[in-house]
Each structure stands twice: as C-alpha cells, then as structure tokens.
Image (cartoon, rainbow, N blue to C red; front, side, top):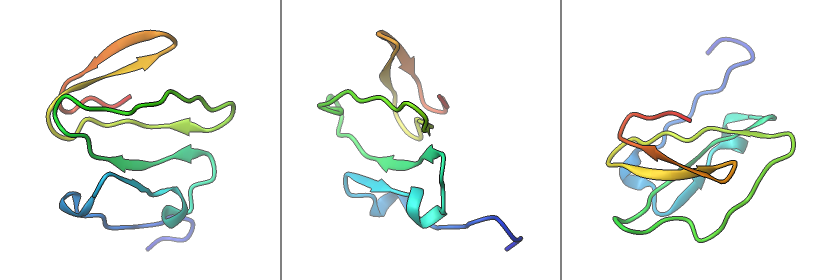
Length: 80
C-alpha cells in the first residue's frame, strides 16, 4: 500500500446495523460508516457536523436523506 493511504475490507453481508469505518481507515476529516436498514426503516435521529464531512452511498435499494431540511431521493448508486 502506498504511504499515506489506508485499506480496509468490510463484506457487506457482515454489516449488522452500523459499522464505523473512520478509525480503521485513519480518517481525520470525513465520517465513513456502513449502515444497513431494513425496508421501510431508517435512522431514528438527525445530526449535523460543524467541521466533519460525511459521505452517503446507496449500495442497494433506494431511500431518502434529509439535507438542509429538504428530503432528497437516493436511488441505488447515489453518492451524497
């Protein structure tokens, strides 16, 4: 692996509910997690970051995300 880069492997089938990946990947300014929701369910909370970025990717299925008070559709393959 090249200097300054991290590599981790998380089989999606092993993600139980939420797997925080920032620490294993050595991230300092980005939140990176795997989250698995059952159909019709989602996060029961809203939060924000003042300095940290967070990336969301719809790997399978579809959902929505609320950003700045607006609900945005996330079909499979969407990266926000």
